[in-house]
Length: 325
Picture 1 (cartoon, rainbow, N blue to C red):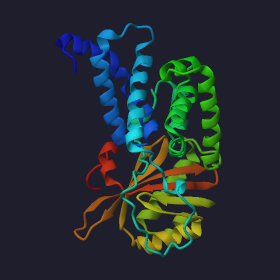
Picture 2: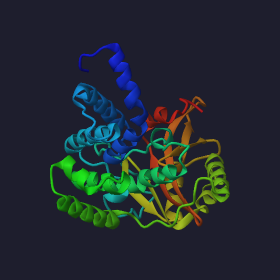
Picture 3: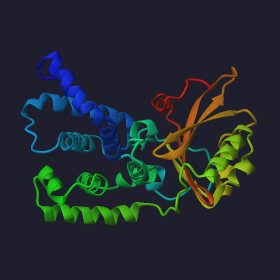
Picture 4: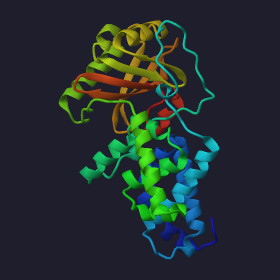
């Protein structure tokens, strides 16, 4: 950081720290990675401190920080590319018994713990907005947009910036911004999967379904589990590029690939991207249950519509999950 007194550094930290969570959410939407988002927010604060003496207050401190964070993210996107989900790379698999093969070289989309990206709990409207704009389906769809279109859509539709503010950031015209926004909205609509209306997390019916879902996994009741899925339900599981549609395929996949017996798994509830989620721990030969996968679910009135299953166990500490269960 730039040279400065301890008092100046403390003052700066007190001013910018309240924006950390929303900047994390912003960088996560842009990059689709919580690991990257943490690094980029740190880089944002470093750049902000270095140029803080030149901050003249012509915009709010919040807007100034967002401008820095956005430019940091644009550079990162150019260097790292996009983070897809399996459903964004090709059609579904029709052979659940065929061994799945991981593609670790693909930088897959990551789920984000609610504790990192949730809005201020004192603001109900902000909570709903944050939940809608950090859902996995939305973040995954953003990954299909070119970098500047992605930025434009997030700044205009999520953060509600004026077109003139975005134009100033890019050094371009309002007409150019509006054109980019129109193209981004059209592509987002085209690449976003159609989802039925999702049930709110506080819905009693959802809580009952989730309890049954967790119990079915722990009891290895696969037939009972898939009864909870909708007929057009999707199951995808990075880093494996294969994905599956329908309860029958999902049941055959779990039976063939996991072959679970009762007490193979322990299931802990958590939250990701404003959606219900579970951490699965698998019993080893020594009887210890260790991290296995994170499941993020879309729940509708008709049941589980989409299961995004992540095998990256390095995510467990970010969710505050224990090493064993």
